[in-house]
Length: 385
Image (cartoon, rainbow, N blue to C red; front, side):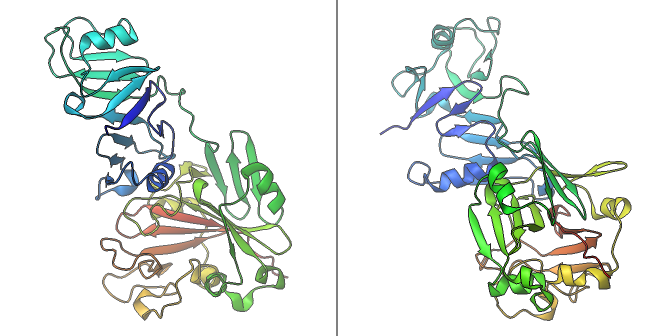
């Protein structure tokens, strides 16, 4: 049976909505494996943190341009002239194997076009038709159909428009109204009211998390803490037993890195005097604009930042190592992190390690291969009497 897709100019084709995040669309495809059994992804492997991402399906192409939000902006039906698809528009059959879409049919269905006679492209708000020829004949076949936003502001980009990171304090989440998460003050109830319940809770009593935050020096309040995982927003919050937020992690969802597709991309930026920092900025920009901690002061925070599977690690792959022990030398103020040994990555090739750099109230994780910033961890310095 031929697949049937509904076409909504400026909005959607089938189950895919313009403005949906890459994480959401790939998660959606996992739940519709029968309808979309083959899925391909492509991006620029030389610069994945600055690259667009394209999803290739049997009948559709989904395009996510490089942006802070990593959202769907184009839905393309290629090779429509030979496709088995049945396309519907407002309860009418727009195209099918027995009723091919032509220049005349487009005009009858959608009305007058912006294009002049003889053009190979027919354009309407939110939808474009590319013809096989530009002869101007009524029976010219449509080869490609593209759904795009009607205007720059016409597509909903989800509940979170941006996240401003404030090291040593917290974050401001724009929903679009500002919601400030202050470390040591914002409560779990506040998160529930503004973000809703997390998709998962990850208790700090887990052995992996004890290693993560330096369990030997944890307070009684921290020992009863748990993570609230908002995968759909690209955020984690560590909630203490007292109910307040202790730490915040924001993820960048860079293709080709070990963390790709575990979390959505949080549209985070760090306001600084010279502008803003984001996941595409090199570590040098963070060093220039932020106050660095000495390595001995932030080692405990960095040492166990990421849960591991509990497998024995070699010295070269230990997340607590201040320098690389194999290959090239690492800067003295960074530490190596090997995520390849984490659960779910066994047998995966082409991914490398990352390095961690600490600042006052902030830890930055950089992917060694692309130099993109995979994640940032926001915390608050403890007062020393």
